[in-house]
Image 1 (cartoon, rainbow, N blue to C red):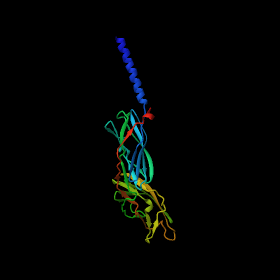
Image 2: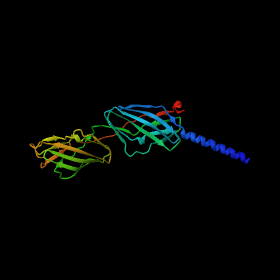
Image 3: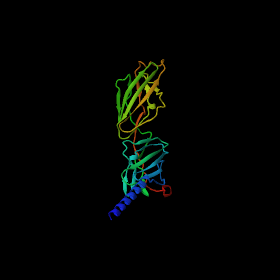
Image 4: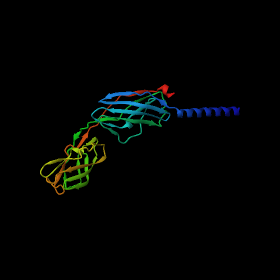
Length: 269
């Protein structure tokens, strides 16, 4: 009798081990879905899969609008067996340029058994903001420098390096943003004003637009050249006029409906 019980126990153990091993190897594949369009923003999924310990998908965001996008993927929600699960917390989101397309991997893990026939998914954490924003005025930056740091609203502008020569002036700045919106810095907009009131354009006209989130910093250079017959920049009193260099833009939430994602039974086999 004891021998029979032992044999049954061994058989059960073998079956359970085999089932567990098979489950660990099982991969569920799912049909892709489209979430439609909002404000020129199109969203769909790609390569949706799950195993017993995680589920993940590629979230394709196609921004066909003229606005920037802000995306924090940790806000996306999986609903499995009436319970909600979220990806690992992301401190700062990603920025997408106007008329750009990108695929983000969204993953949840180690909280439940993810081998289900279907689950719901809601793309969240998506906001848009204007590329123009509201201009923040800043006081002229005097050269030779009377002070290295000036502040304009939520912007702190720190001069790191200055080179003044007869026909050329190069200045390196670092800008820090402390506000709760999105900062847009356009270094190509600033000009140099000489004592005679004439304004000279920044030759770094191809300097990229800088986007900053709260407490982020970025360095940039500006370059001015003036013929020696006009003024000797090495000794001249000059001012950097910021014009429309600094602006802030409001984040506007973009909402998409939840979609049910179902298993592709043929591919999963």
